[in-house]
Structure formats: C-alpha cells, structure tokens
Image 1 (cartoon, rainbow, N blue to C red):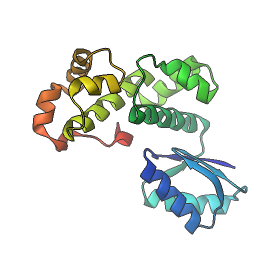
Image 2: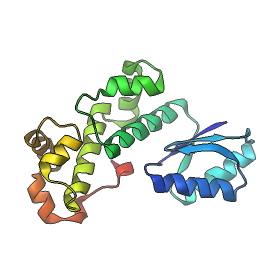
Image 3: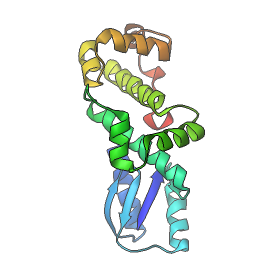
Length: 185
C-alpha cells in the first residue's frame, strides 16, 4: 500500500516517519520524501491512528489525488534543489519522468491549488537554499549560483533581489532571521 504524507522535506523527516511507523507496528518496504510503501494494506482505523500521530509531529496523510500529486511535485523539486541543479535541468522533463502525467495537467493543478506556478515555486526553493548557503558561509556566491543551476552569479543576484527585496550581500549581513523552512515556501 502506498501512503502519501504532507510536509516531509528532509532526511530527518524520513527518520521521524520511520520511527512513528515502527512504534505503530506498521511494516514498510520504504520511506521516502512524501511517500511510504507499506508491506500490508492498512484498514481505516489504522490509517486514522497513523494520521493522528503524524499530525502531532507536523505531518499529515493525504487522500485527495490532486493533493498527493502536488506533494509529490514539491518533494521532487525540493530534492533537486538540495542536491544541486544541473544547468541543463528541465522541470517539465523531470516531473514528467516521475509523475507520468502531461506537464500541462500537473502545472494547471499545481497553480490552481498552490496559487503559484511550478516554476515560481522552484525559484523560491532555490532562493531559500541560496539563503542557507549564504548564512552558513558554505560557498561563495558564484559557487552557489553554479550549484543551483544559474548561468551566473549576476542572474542569481537579480532573482534573489526580485524575490527578497535585497541583494545576497545585504541578506548575508542581516543573518539567520530572514530564512524560511523549505516546507513553508
């Protein structure tokens, strides 16, 4: 049985869900961002128990097919941004390869429900990742731009300013307080 879980955005989320499932006596094949493959089918009472436990730690089970797809899109894009974006990366091809639906259908549903396009959501994720890297001094701006698939540091800087209202340098001098959790973007 496949379960879809909202708000799973990092490896710690996966570990938390694995621990919750083990404590609930649910055997599983795998736990990935936003998805769990259980060994057996779960009845309604068990699903409700798991949903209550998940909600206590900031997650929730998804039942609506559109919500499941949107969560899958978000998880896939977050995963790409966290690993680094190839400069030849295509959102359309990537999502089509993993979701097996026409991109225009995916995009329309995502935009209707989330109120932003997939492309804008992806940009917001890249800006949040650049904020993280800037705050922790992990890379120079040019390296951050390359890591996130920008053609240049100027392109990243322009997009950063457009989204945040400040340059990366201004942001860096202001520090941690202006970052968002990636699942809140």
